[in-house]
Image (tube, rainbow, N blue to C red; front, side):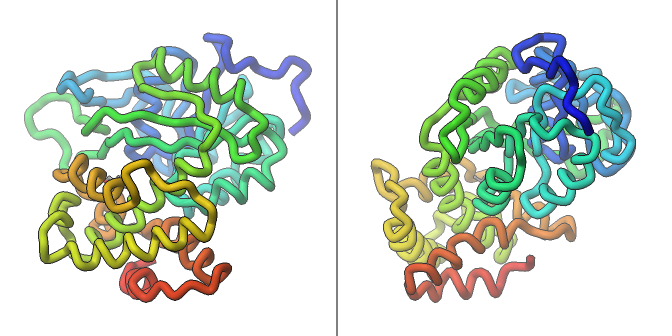
Amino acid sequence: MTQPSNPPVLTDRASSWLIVGAGALGQLFAAHLASQRAVTLLGRRDAPSTLGYLTAEGEQRRIALPRLRLRDWRPSPPPALVILATKAHDGEAALAELEPRLDPTTPLLLLQNGFRLQPRLTTCWPGPVLCASTTEAAYRPTSPSTSGEPAVDVVHAARGHTWIGDLAGEHAELAERIAETMNEAGLAASACADIRRRLWHKLAINAVINPLTARYRIPNGELAHPARQREVTALVGEISRLMAAEGIEPPEAGWMALVQRAIGNSAANQSSMLQDVLAGRPTERDAILGPLLEAAERHALDVPALRALYSSTPG
Ligand code: KPL
């Protein structure tokens, strides 16, 4: 696609923002950002043009916004921002499908878990690539409503915070503007200069909680049980050695406290990987455990607990 003569301005309230990926996070961001921008939500399936949203405060809302299949979307107007909210393993394919219809300078905001897509797209995408690390919790209810109430597509399970930054350290101003709009839309967000560190911290949490809860089919909180603590401790020990070797600054209270706090804070949650396993979907194993195993190779570190976890986790 050729560059438009007047590229869309992200801060213009009339500008359109495209959200690619209609999973729980994509829907949550769409539900909020639609109050501030002309949001279009793209997914793999046909969907009605309203979104049923249950807020974190228990209020049910219906939000009007175009929801289209990826292949049906036309760039008129071209988006000022593309928020890629697919699973990590679907991100490149979704972007490749859209690429012929996008101006190559369009900024991207990546919402994926792990540390796979972020460095790849930072290198490959010609426009600015922003990465987000979020603690927002949302899920899609599995059974349709039977109460006669309009169906809820997405539930905001717990309010969190989103940090936005870029790995190249070149787009601080853009990160500020996006964070500002998210705050105006009711999602707490800040721009940050250390997004790489934040992504690896989240990865440490996901590397322990997601595969273990998927293997034992338990809610996150059950990892606090003494019977599971031996595995948690072994994994956190290996992860902390890898992080030191990679030069990732540890959290103030240490890696164990970070993981235990995440287990406590999300005690009632089903991890995203358990949800994927139960739904028969591919998991984010490679985006989450892959970068750790690659770091182990790079630094010739022995990580038997992580290797065993990788082998026992469906891909
Ligand atoms: O991010 C998560 C996930 O499930 O992917 C945690 C923090 C583990 C919460 O469930």
